[in-house]
Amino acid sequence: MRRRASNVIVFSIAIVLSLVGIALIYSASHRVFGFELAFKQASWFLTGLSLALVINWTVASGFYRYRWLLYFFGVALLVLTLFFGVDARGGQRWLSLWRFNLQTSEVMKLFLLLTLAGISEKIEAQQLSRFRGIFYILAVAAVPVVLIFLQPNLGTVLVFLAIVCGWFFISGWWQEGIALVVLGTGGAIGGSLVLAPFEGNTERIVQAVVELPAQIGLVFWFTLGVLLLVTVVIPYFKRRNVNFAGYICLLLTGIIIGTMLIPSLAPYQRERLESFFNPFAVSREGGYSLIQSQIAIGSGGWFGQGYMSGTQSQLGFIPELWTDFIFSVGVEEFGALFAIFIVLCYLLVIYGVFSAAALADEWWIFYFFSGIGIVWIAHLIIGIGMAIGLTPISGLPLPFVSYGGSFLIVNWVMVGLFVKLNRRRSFL
Image (cartoon, rainbow, N blue to C red):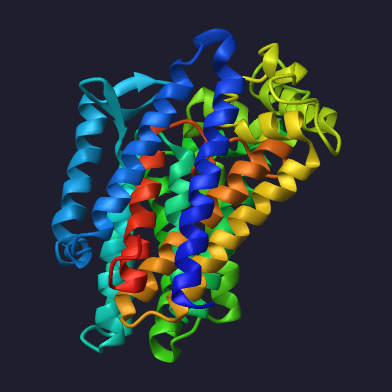
């Protein structure tokens, strides 16, 4: 795909998705808020589009030049959010700036992509060794991950982890990428052991481990650390790969972390995870959203019930329908054809971003474009997956479509940087 074609595709489809989002938000919210939410989304869309146009007429590489300054600024915003953030929806994720609530984790995504792109460029230029580069990437990503987890915002944490995992694969570090996948799989297995129907016995075992005397617990974690050192770290530094025993040890480590992590989650987060395994068992709590979302999608058929005519959405059965479940609203009103249309739009945008990355003139641009694609892929998979029950409910919005000012504006800034860097001259 030519650079100009990828620019036209990404820019035009982003406009189409934004306009579709405004229409769906109005349909989902007009009975309660009238034009208010749709008007706000439209104003944020115009703000983001304006910023994209401004970026297109400026030196976009300045963002890259000051990437470390932006990174530490983003970390400072996350720290401020922990202490002075707006308390809503079970956590502190927004900073109140006059009449606008800034979701600092969304801003941090952009800054992290720029910073990781700089580290990877130094690795490609052989200014950093592979091992030091991997350490820097993990360390730079770990700081915002921990701060966002403390908000708590588990959905965004998953996106940041997807960025790191995807980064290893696009860098050609297959061993490290597979190791992260195995570790994450172990965490998922460990979490499911606690949340599955036989959770009673497992929880008693976990509780017994947690309540072990400090000395025994110290021995337990020390032993695990030694196993990781012997089976993963030492072989890796000797042969630059992870052997089979190392993968098994990473899997067991992930299982342990998963079983220990679940009891520490906020109640609403645990309800969401429980609803993934059996939504009817918690149908009055976390499972209610998933059940209503699936009913809405199923009732849409091929052609839908018509704009502003969906029963589940118009009667208010679906919670958070203009943010988390905007996809369900669209399918209920316009049917399966809408789902196909939306997925094709996202696939074209993602294809355009990665094709432009393959033609990039500089390494940092290649990694930055690829990072944008990874972010949108993660939001697409989780955002649609939680609406149909394939992934746990995590509150992740669909790019350009879901209601939310910070997310929409940051996405448009990414589009502006993409268009500018892909052409290196004005396109619009």
